[in-house]
Each structure stands twice: as C-alpha cells, then as structure tokens.
Length: 138
Length: 265
Image (tube, rainbow over all chains, first blue to last red; front, side, top):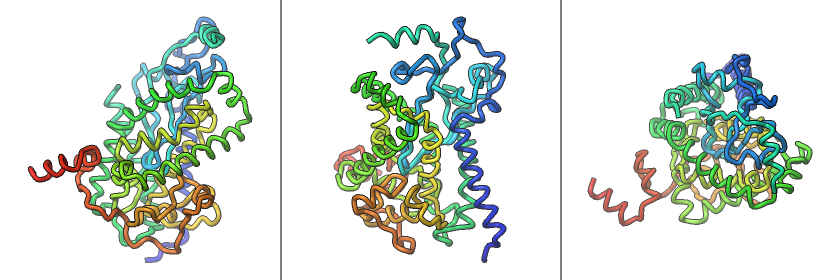
C-alpha cells in the first residue's frame, strides 16, 4: 500500500522533532521543567554554586563553575534518559539551572549504541573557593 | 543506586525509542517485509535491558577509572590551552581524531580474531532495526567507547561544550541500524545513513563502511561502499549461540571449555 504524502511528512516531522527534543534534553535545556524547586537549593556560603563533581573534576575545570563531563557512547547503544528521579530530595539536588546535569560523565557514541536515559551520579556540594585554591597547586 | 529510578529510566528510554523509530520503520522500510516483532527481537530486547540495567553503569565506571588515569598523561596547562580554543575548533578536532581512532579500532575488530570474538556478537543480528543496534557485548562496549573517547580523556577536550553534537551522534548511531531507507542526499556524507551501515552488516566480514557515523574515514581509506540496494542478508557466516547468556559467555571462554559446556547440555 502506498503511503500518502501527508503520512510521510508527518512521520518525518515527528522523527525530527523527537530527535531535536532529545538533543535539547541531553544538553540540559529541559532540566528546569524536569527538576524544579530551585528555591530549595543549598548554596555555598561563599556564593558558589551547587555542582556535580566527579573524582577528576579539577582536571576538567578551568574555574570553580561546574562542568559537564561528556563522553561519546558506543555506536551500538545509546542511553536515552539522563536521569529519572522524582523524589523530593533529588528535585532539590537537581534543577537549579539548565546546566544542572553538569558533572555527569557523558560519553560519545560510536556507531553502535548510545544510552539514552541514565541516572545521574550523586551531587556534591563543592566550595568554589576550595576548588580554586586546589587548582593552583602544581 | 536507586533501582526504581533505573527501571523507570529504562522504560522511558524504551518508550522514547519506539516512538522515534517504529513509525519511520513502518513508513520508510528498508526491508518492507520485516516485522516489528521479527525473529530474535526478544534477544535484542534482552540486550537493551542488559545495557540499561547492568552494563552501562559498569562500562561508565571502568571508563571513569581509565579517564582518571589517562587525563594525567598530559599536563594541566596543555589541557587548559586545548579547552581555551574556540569551541568550533575543539569540536572539529575532537570529532576528527575520535573518528580516526574508532575507524581503525573498528577495522581491527574485523581483522583480529580476538577482537572479532566480541564484536561478532553485534554482527550476529540477522535482522537490523533500532532494537538490534543494542546487541553488543559489554567488553566490546568498553573497547569501542574507550577508543572513541580517548582524545577527550587524554587531551581534555570539553565534550560538555558540544553535548548537542554528542547527543545527536548517540541517537543517530541507533538510527543507522534501523530498518529505514530514507534518501538524504549528500547529507549522508556528513552524518551517515542506514543504507551505508546496513552494508557494513552484510554477511561478508570485511564488507567495509567501518566509520563511526560520518563515512569520511571510509572515503579517505578506501572502504566506502554504497550499492543502490539493500544487502541480501545480514549476520555472520560462523555458527554462533542464539541465546543471551550463550552470546555473553561464548567470546570469553576457550573453545574447548565452550564445547564441553554445549555437550553437557
């Protein structure tokens, strides 16, 4: 059976829209909607931001601002979700800005796979002054 | 780790992927006769669930460990100077170097028997679609993901700054496995297309198209192939287990032990 032009057009539109939405989601643009309650966020007494830092965050950071660790994933699979955690506690941890998922180790995909959604690592409150001080050490 | 969240994330991912790819496969099928619930779809579903629920976390942990180790190879000032480059330049550098490394890494997977043992899990799929993209041995994932991220690990390229490109390549990697044939003209030379990757999954182990997403490396090194039709058959010529556990174990066991295990059954 031949598909009508409208169905074909609609299918491509949905496909492109969903991929665009996924890209924006992975870039953190929807975090404000998914993980709000930013007013409940704790902040550093020194005025720093709450960030997610992994063990080697210093080596990735030019300053105390949180930075997202991104990696390519395999070409066979992709994790779709970034994190689905609806608990109140997690909402407090996430959601401050569109860049709330910074510190996550994202991976670059090869041609086979990429994980679409996956849970984020635990957040950690980091004192920006301490970070700056640590960075200056050789 | 919160397993409820993990299961929710997996369910959401599965639903999303169905919404993205199934309509495309129905409206623009590369092989019109192929059903959604085709042969071995459950096996591939096991791979998807395995990746989300078991292996992706482990792969990430292992790569994080290597990342911690590799990012000390180059001094911090050099890494900072790399990160200080214009974003567009960083993006071009990291994508080119990553694609170069993964291209040769992938060719080796097809050439070297030891690597092929693991990689042929992925090639054992006899039907290609978005779900079959997830058929991958976790050790193969570590190899592939590790190689493609090597430049970022060593030189400290800021992939976070190009997270949109990384995300696009992630979802496109699934798309190129899908049962879709949708001509996109010359754009396929930049971002790849299912018609190219389907030929990579031809029965012949060294058919070509080893590049990751963009076929530029295949063009550079003479392995580009794109006949004007779909391959007759996907898969491998060798005998291979048909179960999830079997495919997980087979590459890791010496042949003698595997044969004894199979005989016992």
